[in-house]
Image 1 (tube, rainbow, N blue to C red):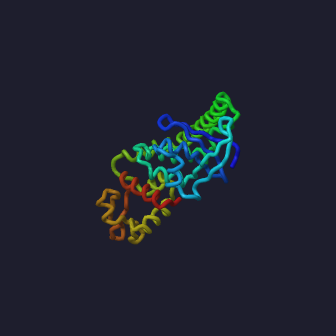
Image 2 (cartoon, rainbow, N blue to C red):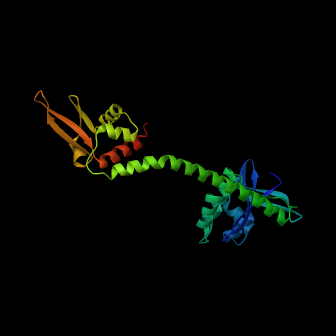
Length: 248
């Protein structure tokens, strides 16, 4: 193991100390048993934690050479499951949603050596806080830029969706960023449209749902010719269908 301890603090549960062994977090067993309400830490660790999930090391703590029992993540879960404390689930949620992800994602723990005072520890914590805030600001800036790009398209889409009546497939395809023929081929493949001569006609069930309107007219040859129009509701249906299929 390394020569450093790491500490995480919580207003409800207090502090837990960890260290890294073979790139995996291990916890000071006494901290965990105290939080989970066990009466005899050593006995209860032996009772509930498998041998491969615990180890004992001699380390310097508070200027003294002490024998400390560590448990790994699996051992931690064993103690949580066996605990009768009402807050055991909340403790697990804190460890799994904050402590472990922080260690693995950012290394954002506070490394403590036995000879370091509180001011040194607080200085390290301040650096971690600064790094976390910087990452958060960068993420917000990225989201703001993406929103600025997407907003005009969203406004145009909302305006179209609030309109009454219907639009042609040329307009619908343009709004969705597709070519007209490619979009119609996709909808035929999904059994939304079917070929009728040179026309693409929406199936009746989709017309009844209010997605499409089919207009028929008599051509010069005396035959009826159908043209499918897209309603605002239909445009939303096509958009969701494309999103579900994850096509581009």
